[in-house]
Length: 450
Ligand SMILES: Cc1cc2nc3c(=O)[nH]c(=O)nc-3n(C[C@H](O)[C@H](O)[C@H](O)COP(=O)(O)O)c2cc1C
Image 1 (cartoon, rainbow, N blue to C red):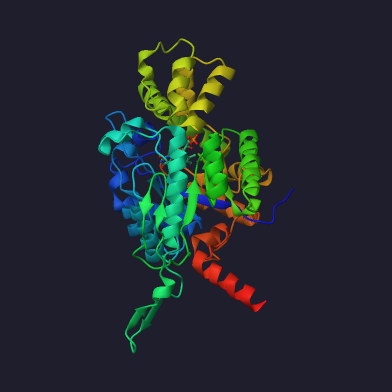
Image 2: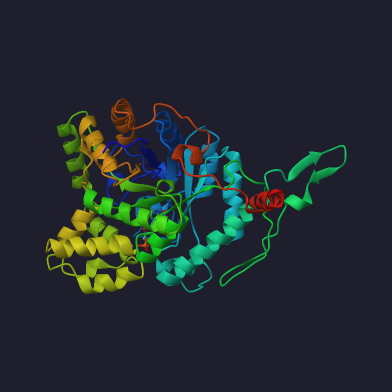
């Protein structure tokens, strides 16, 4: 059934490459992840393509086995503040971890970004899945999976509470009477919880979006509940339309169960297209990527969602070591690790086959512009996605996507021809947030009146 809304598009700024292999392509600059000119070029190109948002991922621990982009990259708020100054419409989604930051800092950073960008900031709330992260933060124990989500819920309560410190009209700027603010409109949070004690108020006024947008990507039970209850937009990683549609229906149902409208939560799968001018050209690009993958790199990539498990100790041509992998994956990145375990079991794969399949995801978006647009339309119309987050699989893919695929989507009425809103909330069509104190006062006034 045709949908009345239009799809949302995000682009992942991933510098030198999205995995352990594509960085080796001769056309990819080795220093792309720390080259501002490279980020600026991609950000402006995505904006030319009318994308809704740019996405900056993050993690907080590396080793010599980490992927090239993870090894050496910009801190998210810093790069997004710089990009805010060289773009004007596209949203800026940055990742910060609730396990290793303080809510006051995060509230202040995203509020600042929302002001600097004129209402385009979003926070991707992550919990950090690698135990090794703790060693960079004074060795406080890495919280267990379920505890991480409890921390996340309270952390977000505090951040959103701090964002409400200032009512919209708190700054008077009344020079004649010397009143800079109205103290009645500035509020102290006084939060005392299981994990955080935060007094407030926040030291920056209410932001252009009222509150920055919240992104999340949980896929475990705890993760899906957290996302459905709290996020405006949710990333996921489905491998085919059926699993995408299942996740979509599941999370939307949960959101409704939490008293929200299904359309107020946008589901945005990660997508790795290979676009060519023809289907054959796209297929050749996919094969080109496969040729860059070494088995050593594929094993490193495979280890990541399993808490950086070392798969090099097993026989490559024996069955996938499911038992050890399950133990390592459960407390780490559950969604990805369990998906790998499932396909290895279903298809009876060896370790080598599993690693190579994970390292060279072909997906359903390989082809000329019509074919890629057809697949996106099918996912969108079958309620597998409200939009797509585009990873650049090979150098030059963003250019091809903007030049070839975006016009097809626009011609079909599936994607905007121009920006019609100035904030990210407006672009994503997610609801605004009324200040809790203003709302309470308005409610009390109405009750008095009537
Ligand atoms: C598209 C996408 C992007 C993500 N980006 C990050 C990231 O930048 N940093 C991070 O620590 N986790 C990131 N994650 C992981 C999620 O935050 C979450 O840990 C993961 O989906 C596992 O959730 P679960 O433990 O509830 O299964 C991302 C997930 C997806 C699907």
